[in-house]
Image (cartoon, rainbow, N blue to C red; front, side, top):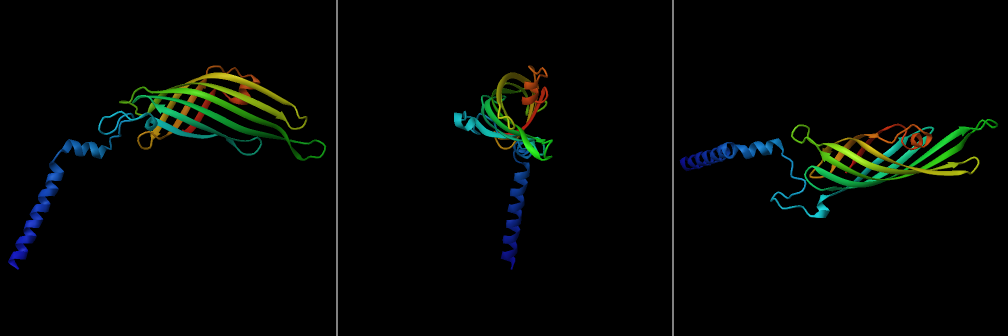
Length: 213
C-alpha cells in the first residue's frame, strides 16, 4: 500500500510540474497563440515565399438579385492574386439577366416586354492602407467595361451599347484562412452622368457588392 501511495504521489508531483511548466514557460508564445495571429499571406510559416498558385484566390458573387417586375439575376466570377502582404490584383467578369413585363391593354394579361443581357469585365487593385489601425480595410480601384443588349419582346427589335467606368472606393475583407474572405465593397462611378445607358447598367453612381474570394 505504501508503494502505491508513493507512486501516486510521484505521478501527481510530476503532472503538476509539467502543468506549471506549460503555464510559465514561453509566456510570449502562449500570448501570441491565444491572440490567434493570422499567418502571412505571401509566406509559409518557415518564411519561404508562397508559390504563384498558392497566392491565387478564386471566387465571386451573385449580382442583380431581384424578384418581381423586373426579375433579375446574375453572377460575377473573380480571380485575384496576393501580390504582397497588402496588395491584391484581380480580374473579374459578370453576366446579369433582367426581364421586364408589361400589361397588355387589350387582353389585360401580363406579357414579356423587354429582356436585358448584360456582360461585363473588370480589372481591380486593392491596397490595405492602414493594417495596424483598421486591418483588412482596402482602398479599391477598378476599371469596369459593361455591354448591354436590350431585346424588345413585342416588336423583336434589339439594341446594344457599352460603357467603360472607373470606380473608386473601399473594400472590407473578413478573412477566412490565409487568403479566402468575404468582401464588402462600396464604390463610386466617376463616369456616371445619369443618362439612360448608365441607369440601365448601374442604376446609380454607387456600386455595392458582396463577394467571396
